[in-house]
Length: 157
Image (cartoon, rainbow, N blue to C red; front, side, top):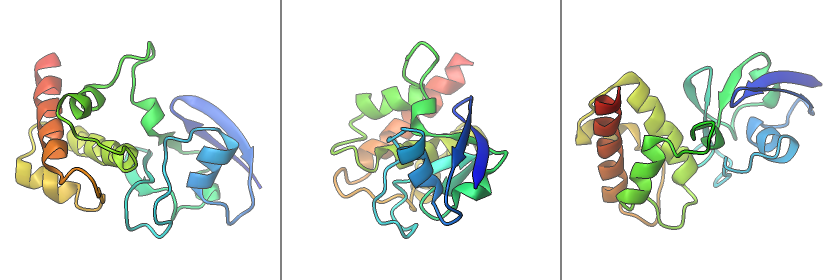
C-alpha cells in the first residue's frame, strides 16, 4: 500500500505492507533511525514519536494508520540550522542520558509534556515519563533536564 504522510515537515510517500509498523517505515523506508526499537511490545517507550502532536508508540502503530498525518521524530526536534532544541541541550547539560538508547523516546514524551504544561512539577514529570524505561540513569538527570528545559523555554518565549 502507498502511504503518504509528513515527517518532520517533509512529505513522504512509501510503499508498505499493511502490517508494517510506523517504526519500521521511519527507520527502514525513510532512513530516520532515531526512533529506537527496544521491546517491540509498546512497553519500553524507546519508539515514541508524535503523530499529529500526540505521543504514539511507533512499534504498535501500523504505517498505514499514519496516512495523512504529521509525524515528529527526535530528528525533527532540532532547529533548521541544526541547533539543538532546549530539551536536547538540557539532557546533555544535566546528564539525562547515558547509553542513549531510551533518549529519543524520552525526549519525545518530555516534549509532549512541555507542549501541554509550561511548568510541570518534578512529580508530574516523573508520572509523564513513567512509560519510558531507562536502565542506566536512575531518572534523576532526566527529571532535572526536563525541569531545566521548561524553565529555559518559559524564559525564552
